[in-house]
Length: 402
Image 1 (cartoon, rainbow, N blue to C red):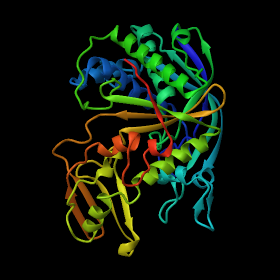
Image 2 (image 1 turned 135 degrees about the vertical axis):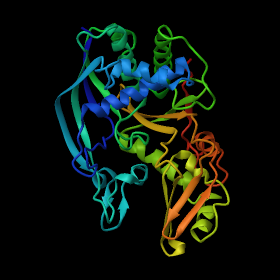
Image 3 (image 1 turned 90 degrees about the vertical axis):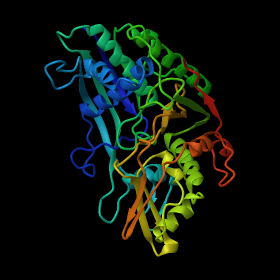
């Protein structure tokens, strides 16, 4: 039987919840299964293309199952053992001073703002610690070795590029392998533990690993073309770019905080968005596309200059659009920390869709943004706020996988 056992540790806290996200955080197998599905879909889509979603869904379901007579149970099982977690509140993680209304880590507070407490909701708690994860083939599954191999590839991608929980795209819920047991062949050829000691070595490790994942999948599936932009998040060099920041940090807090402060500085009162939204709140139309929306929706705007008026921006028919730009923190083999950035060039929203600004007595619609701001943030120059990564000394090393 194909089987491996991992000891996983949180690099950054996990914001997870059950029925009520504001209750005590809880880690359950469906959360990890969902993350693995996402990365397998991105990887297989980068090989077979994005034109036939039903075909891709079938390939994904052959590994992780579907509740029907055709496919049925998952080809693999996941089990947790011996979790040693402690919970930490948003206030503790960001170092909030409740009297001075300031945070020790304002960049973390900005990236994880949705976990803060409000007048209507209590703040969220996150999990910090480690647990044992056992992954094995389910007995009686056809093509068990291939299905387990595909699950392993998804696992490798998730543990090197992804996260878990509500702030996974903003450097939350990053996990890393402390120890691994098993005799599956890929453990030697595609190791789950990070061995890199520098950002350049990490970039090379990612290049080799992603290329190998794609090569193994191309041996099983017939390659086809990928649209530009792709129909969904796809791991292909034409529509997914990756970088490792050259700088290293002594702690995950330092890494996330600097990235968060840079991101906040870049978006702060950015024109023409600032005036466009302010005018719409004042009764006018959304005269121009809100460019900040390219980083994801919804967005909440607040104007003290308008007496505290606020409004929310989302699309007409979708509650949210996840950010195409992902942030991740990895701990290197020497104990320092490095930042990884991933940009999926996927369709933002259907072309017929519009952005909608709503609030008390506010209703305005406007066009969709382009990806100009994402490019500027990554490589600059930022003539307006001078807060691109490049201008803040955060030079990037591109991960050139094939």
